[in-house]
Image (tube, rainbow, N blue to C red; front, side, top):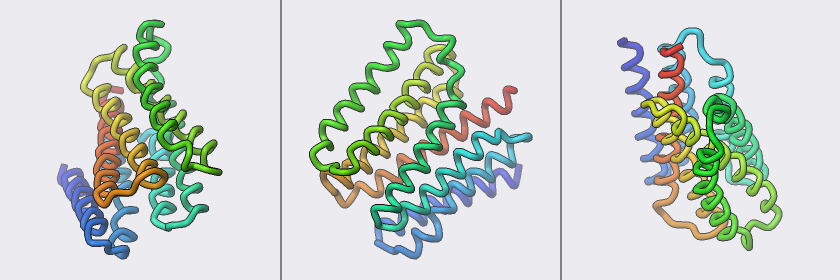
Length: 218
Protein backbone atom coordinates (compact mmCIF):
# COMPACT_ATOMS: atom_id res chain seq x y z
CA UNK A 1 0.00 0.00 0.00
CA UNK A 2 2.86 2.40 0.81
CA UNK A 3 4.51 1.71 -2.54
CA UNK A 4 1.21 2.32 -4.32
CA UNK A 5 0.75 5.71 -2.63
CA UNK A 6 4.39 6.66 -3.20
CA UNK A 7 4.27 5.89 -6.95
CA UNK A 8 0.95 7.74 -7.30
CA UNK A 9 2.45 10.75 -5.49
CA UNK A 10 5.49 10.67 -7.79
CA UNK A 11 3.15 10.43 -10.79
CA UNK A 12 1.26 13.55 -9.68
CA UNK A 13 4.56 15.34 -8.96
CA UNK A 14 5.91 14.49 -12.44
CA UNK A 15 2.70 15.84 -14.01
CA UNK A 16 2.91 19.09 -12.03
CA UNK A 17 6.60 19.61 -12.84
CA UNK A 18 5.95 18.91 -16.52
CA UNK A 19 3.14 21.47 -16.52
CA UNK A 20 5.48 23.98 -14.88
CA UNK A 21 7.97 23.23 -17.65
CA UNK A 22 5.29 23.95 -20.26
CA UNK A 23 4.18 27.20 -18.60
CA UNK A 24 7.71 28.52 -18.04
CA UNK A 25 9.07 27.25 -21.35
CA UNK A 26 11.71 25.16 -19.55
CA UNK A 27 12.62 22.48 -22.09
CA UNK A 28 14.93 20.65 -19.67
CA UNK A 29 12.06 20.09 -17.24
CA UNK A 30 9.93 18.76 -20.08
CA UNK A 31 12.64 16.35 -21.23
CA UNK A 32 13.02 15.04 -17.67
CA UNK A 33 9.44 14.83 -16.44
CA UNK A 34 7.21 14.18 -19.46
CA UNK A 35 8.67 10.70 -20.16
CA UNK A 36 8.40 9.86 -16.45
CA UNK A 37 4.61 10.27 -16.44
CA UNK A 38 3.78 7.11 -18.39
CA UNK A 39 6.67 5.16 -16.85
CA UNK A 40 5.32 5.91 -13.38
CA UNK A 41 1.81 4.92 -14.50
CA UNK A 42 3.22 1.61 -15.74
CA UNK A 43 4.87 1.09 -12.36
CA UNK A 44 1.67 2.03 -10.50
CA UNK A 45 -0.33 -0.51 -12.51
CA UNK A 46 2.29 -3.25 -12.11
CA UNK A 47 2.42 -2.83 -8.32
CA UNK A 48 -1.35 -3.33 -8.02
CA UNK A 49 -2.05 -6.00 -10.66
CA UNK A 50 -0.27 -9.36 -10.81
CA UNK A 51 0.08 -10.78 -13.38
CA UNK A 52 0.02 -7.67 -15.53
CA UNK A 53 -1.82 -7.42 -18.81
CA UNK A 54 1.04 -7.45 -21.34
CA UNK A 55 -1.07 -5.82 -24.06
CA UNK A 56 -1.81 -2.87 -21.79
CA UNK A 57 1.85 -2.50 -20.82
CA UNK A 58 2.78 -2.59 -24.52
CA UNK A 59 0.25 0.18 -25.20
CA UNK A 60 1.73 2.31 -22.42
CA UNK A 61 5.25 1.69 -23.71
CA UNK A 62 4.16 2.87 -27.16
CA UNK A 63 2.72 6.00 -25.53
CA UNK A 64 6.06 6.51 -23.77
CA UNK A 65 7.84 6.33 -27.15
CA UNK A 66 5.29 8.76 -28.59
CA UNK A 67 5.81 11.18 -25.69
CA UNK A 68 9.57 11.16 -26.19
CA UNK A 69 9.35 11.64 -29.97
CA UNK A 70 6.92 14.54 -29.65
CA UNK A 71 9.38 16.37 -27.41
CA UNK A 72 11.44 17.03 -30.56
CA UNK A 73 10.01 19.67 -32.87
CA UNK A 74 10.47 18.08 -36.29
CA UNK A 75 8.21 16.56 -38.94
CA UNK A 76 9.81 13.11 -38.75
CA UNK A 77 9.44 12.98 -34.97
CA UNK A 78 5.82 14.12 -35.22
CA UNK A 79 5.08 11.32 -37.70
CA UNK A 80 6.92 8.83 -35.48
CA UNK A 81 4.92 9.96 -32.47
CA UNK A 82 1.72 9.70 -34.49
CA UNK A 83 2.54 6.10 -35.43
CA UNK A 84 3.43 5.17 -31.84
CA UNK A 85 0.14 6.53 -30.49
CA UNK A 86 -1.83 5.00 -33.36
CA UNK A 87 -0.45 1.56 -32.46
CA UNK A 88 -1.19 2.23 -28.78
CA UNK A 89 -4.81 3.06 -29.62
CA UNK A 90 -5.16 -0.16 -31.61
CA UNK A 91 -4.10 -2.04 -28.47
CA UNK A 92 -6.54 0.02 -26.35
CA UNK A 93 -9.31 -0.90 -28.80
CA UNK A 94 -8.42 -4.58 -28.42
CA UNK A 95 -8.51 -4.27 -24.62
CA UNK A 96 -11.85 -2.43 -24.63
CA UNK A 97 -13.56 -4.46 -27.36
CA UNK A 98 -15.57 -6.80 -25.14
CA UNK A 99 -18.67 -4.62 -25.35
CA UNK A 100 -18.84 -4.65 -29.15
CA UNK A 101 -20.10 -8.21 -29.58
CA UNK A 102 -22.68 -7.80 -26.82
CA UNK A 103 -24.14 -4.58 -28.27
CA UNK A 104 -27.29 -4.21 -30.35
CA UNK A 105 -27.52 -2.39 -33.68
CA UNK A 106 -29.20 0.52 -31.92
CA UNK A 107 -26.37 0.76 -29.40
CA UNK A 108 -23.79 0.64 -32.18
CA UNK A 109 -25.50 3.54 -33.97
CA UNK A 110 -25.75 5.47 -30.70
CA UNK A 111 -22.03 5.02 -30.15
CA UNK A 112 -20.91 5.74 -33.72
CA UNK A 113 -22.87 8.95 -34.42
CA UNK A 114 -21.26 11.36 -31.87
CA UNK A 115 -17.70 10.29 -32.64
CA UNK A 116 -18.36 10.33 -36.40
CA UNK A 117 -19.61 13.91 -36.09
CA UNK A 118 -16.54 14.96 -34.10
CA UNK A 119 -14.27 13.23 -36.63
CA UNK A 120 -15.99 14.90 -39.60
CA UNK A 121 -15.95 18.33 -37.95
CA UNK A 122 -12.27 18.11 -37.06
CA UNK A 123 -11.15 16.97 -40.52
CA UNK A 124 -13.30 19.65 -42.17
CA UNK A 125 -11.67 22.28 -39.95
CA UNK A 126 -8.11 21.12 -40.59
CA UNK A 127 -8.15 19.78 -44.16
CA UNK A 128 -6.94 22.94 -45.90
CA UNK A 129 -3.89 23.19 -43.62
CA UNK A 130 -2.79 19.55 -43.47
CA UNK A 131 -1.01 19.25 -46.82
CA UNK A 132 0.97 15.98 -46.94
CA UNK A 133 -0.27 15.13 -43.45
CA UNK A 134 -3.92 14.84 -44.58
CA UNK A 135 -3.97 11.04 -44.98
CA UNK A 136 -1.93 10.26 -41.81
CA UNK A 137 -4.13 12.56 -39.73
CA UNK A 138 -7.33 11.04 -41.20
CA UNK A 139 -6.08 7.50 -40.44
CA UNK A 140 -5.13 8.48 -36.89
CA UNK A 141 -8.44 10.28 -36.34
CA UNK A 142 -10.36 7.21 -37.54
CA UNK A 143 -8.48 4.94 -35.14
CA UNK A 144 -8.97 7.16 -32.09
CA UNK A 145 -12.64 7.67 -33.03
CA UNK A 146 -13.04 3.87 -33.11
CA UNK A 147 -11.51 3.77 -29.63
CA UNK A 148 -14.19 6.24 -28.52
CA UNK A 149 -16.94 4.17 -30.13
CA UNK A 150 -15.69 0.95 -28.52
CA UNK A 151 -15.40 2.64 -25.11
CA UNK A 152 -18.97 3.96 -25.38
CA UNK A 153 -20.24 0.51 -26.42
CA UNK A 154 -18.41 -0.94 -23.45
CA UNK A 155 -20.35 1.46 -21.22
CA UNK A 156 -23.71 0.92 -22.93
CA UNK A 157 -23.45 -2.85 -22.50
CA UNK A 158 -21.85 -2.84 -19.06
CA UNK A 159 -22.65 0.23 -16.97
CA UNK A 160 -20.03 0.00 -14.24
CA UNK A 161 -17.56 2.43 -12.70
CA UNK A 162 -14.82 0.73 -14.71
CA UNK A 163 -16.63 1.29 -18.03
CA UNK A 164 -17.23 4.94 -17.06
CA UNK A 165 -13.48 5.32 -16.43
CA UNK A 166 -12.71 3.80 -19.84
CA UNK A 167 -15.18 6.09 -21.60
CA UNK A 168 -13.74 9.08 -19.78
CA UNK A 169 -10.23 8.03 -20.76
CA UNK A 170 -11.15 7.64 -24.43
CA UNK A 171 -13.02 10.96 -24.45
CA UNK A 172 -10.16 12.87 -22.83
CA UNK A 173 -7.73 11.27 -25.30
CA UNK A 174 -9.83 12.48 -28.22
CA UNK A 175 -10.10 15.97 -26.70
CA UNK A 176 -6.34 16.09 -26.11
CA UNK A 177 -5.42 14.89 -29.60
CA UNK A 178 -8.00 17.10 -31.30
CA UNK A 179 -6.64 20.14 -29.44
CA UNK A 180 -3.08 19.15 -30.37
CA UNK A 181 -4.11 18.94 -34.05
CA UNK A 182 -5.89 22.30 -33.91
CA UNK A 183 -2.88 23.87 -32.20
CA UNK A 184 -0.46 22.48 -34.80
CA UNK A 185 -2.47 22.79 -38.01
CA UNK A 186 -5.14 25.46 -37.48
CA UNK A 187 -4.66 28.02 -34.73
CA UNK A 188 -2.05 28.06 -31.98
CA UNK A 189 -2.96 29.41 -28.54
CA UNK A 190 -0.64 29.86 -25.56
CA UNK A 191 -2.86 27.84 -23.22
CA UNK A 192 -3.35 24.87 -25.58
CA UNK A 193 -0.18 22.95 -24.54
CA UNK A 194 -1.25 22.98 -20.87
CA UNK A 195 -4.79 21.88 -21.78
CA UNK A 196 -3.43 19.16 -24.07
CA UNK A 197 -1.23 17.76 -21.30
CA UNK A 198 -3.91 17.87 -18.60
CA UNK A 199 -6.45 16.03 -20.76
CA UNK A 200 -3.78 13.53 -21.87
CA UNK A 201 -2.83 12.71 -18.29
CA UNK A 202 -6.48 12.35 -17.29
CA UNK A 203 -6.99 10.01 -20.25
CA UNK A 204 -4.07 7.77 -19.33
CA UNK A 205 -4.98 7.70 -15.64
CA UNK A 206 -8.63 6.80 -16.30
CA UNK A 207 -7.66 4.02 -18.71
CA UNK A 208 -5.28 2.74 -16.05
CA UNK A 209 -8.14 2.75 -13.52
CA UNK A 210 -10.20 0.69 -15.97
CA UNK A 211 -7.39 -1.83 -16.37
CA UNK A 212 -6.89 -2.05 -12.62
CA UNK A 213 -10.62 -2.62 -12.07
CA UNK A 214 -10.64 -5.28 -14.77
CA UNK A 215 -7.60 -6.98 -13.31
CA UNK A 216 -9.00 -6.99 -9.79
CA UNK A 217 -12.32 -8.36 -11.05
CA UNK A 218 -10.58 -11.16 -12.93
